[in-house]
Image (cartoon, rainbow, N blue to C red; front, side, top):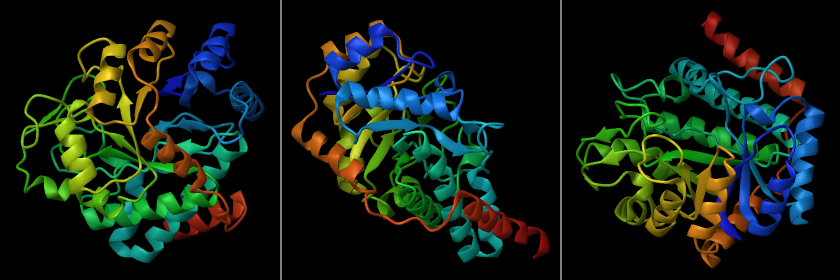
Length: 338
């Protein structure tokens, strides 16, 4: 199995993609807006991927957070609020905010499960920082690590109740970044002591089955390499200090924060300690290059992948989609009346 998650070029698989995916056997896939049109179309696409691999349990992921990060959009699917909405409610009624976040995530997860998506790159556990770049901004659950962890845990629970695996991001923290890592490499100069605040939500939720790295350089830990490509950040900070035990995937390797060819970056990410390299843009030359540049998925990585996919089996849901949305909205509307 190739330790990579690959993107798809369109609404259906091309013949070249189908042949390549059959041969390369990637660990999983990720969908974007270019792959999304209707419920029937997305379900057919994910079923096609399962047919290629001959297994029902397959990692098919998406970035569906709510707010400005949503690939499945109205009018076909409902809009969901960003993390900031639950942060505001937490100011007034923490228990209600946690319940609302859980119901919201379960409803969102039902949308994903209905079309065959098994993993969501959500929740964002980045602790928001005043004055930082807005690339995280209202996606965050707030400025306090305990609050971020509590709402993140509720989100993971809600997704699991819908049969969807959540992925915590961006380990070890993107909240201090003064630049957008999609466009350039952010450098964080905070001390190791100051960074304790950033890693706290990840430490609290270190048993989560899947996590995603940050393309951020932390000078207190590694002055040369971004976290995704740093053996020290992955080995000493993410695995030891935070204690993260799950499947570790890189953020997208085609982001401008990183320098080098995508296959080279995939090899460096795997060598640094990532289990899986994420490549979102469905460029066939890059995907072929990755398959040639990286070793097969390690036994430990394969075990983590299997545990992640199995982690949501047998978890009961708590209501219909409509009931969950109604419960969430009643709790969020209480903001107006408090």
